[in-house]
Image 1 (cartoon, helix red, strand yellow):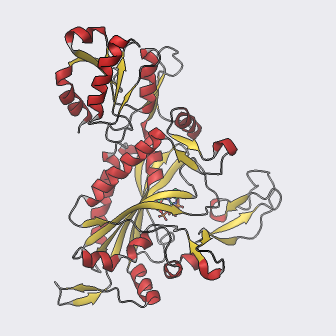
Image 2 (cartoon, protein in one colour):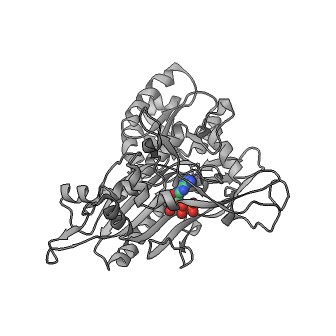
Image 3 (tube, rainbow, N blue to C red):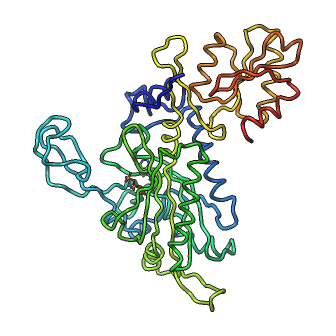
Length: 440
Ligand code: ATP
């Protein structure tokens, strides 16, 4: 059996559309640039990723979760530096008006769209979306759609610390939408203007941030591996002095090798006390931590941040799972999404061999029992071969086939997605069999 990986993003985009993972937003109106809708299997997959992250990050003593509002007081974004500094340098091709990020092209070379070599001078373009809150529209009613979830954590630092009676070091985790008016969105869900982040700010005693960083680097790398990503497709990309953000004293990214090349999936940043200091300054509130274990000293904690794009994690899992087997062999060619069972949108499909009431009624009963424990699907339409192929493309690890023999021997055939081997399993043993095979 020959197998190959995903070669181009367009193969994935069409599978996602065909099989109900991701649709273009507002498709019937011609779509809206770089906006995507998660379809039924896509949202199931995404929810599994979020659940996996939430468990890994908050099922521990030293991290708690919050869910902050998307709209925040406009001063938050002044303090964080986003109003004045969250911009990318932009250039336009004077001939065809195509817009580029200056740091992503060589302006001495021709425009990729029209071939001209006449670009405008670079201008700063602020990436924050803004809108008006309330009925009166003047500058005082301007609010921003948050460009990162982190600030919702910083401004709640003391509230959380005090109500949860937390001592340093401890972290606050959050999953939520963020918005950036990206100049050059693209590569499917890799870079969009509306996306979801899964962020955790870990507050530590100054001087211990780099130790914390080492610990969290390990946790975060392992999370991607535990979700099923292949280690050879992941790498660290440390930020050198040139690419380090002004507020950070160390930073590194986890990159994944997407079909278009290596791309950032997660950032692990040692952000010092920059954000808390700025919020103290702008809010005029004392945000210092009282260290009762160290002579009642008062200080601003340092912050170690882990920030992963949920959509980029989903994209990496989709790319990584994709396999084309037996290419060109008409009978045996198949696309199979080899998701880890924990991440797969559907864990078990129940398929009566043919559409006959004699099989349909007891098979559906069996399905209803399985569905109590697993995301399962019942499918009776079409030939059994076609139904298997469909489940392969959705990435369902196990298919349970109910045939005429089942009526006599009370056993079903369980087909494994990856090996395509089939085993006969007694129905009264099925629950244990599924648990063992799926691993939970
Ligand atoms: P990039 O260099 O790709 O623009 P960034 O360094 O600005 O990303 P961060 O601000 O560190 O990204 O955001 C943390 C994470 O959020 C990124 O690692 C990425 O997974 C995700 N992310 C950032 N911007 C986008 C976007 N426009 N679309 C989808 N995910 C994004």
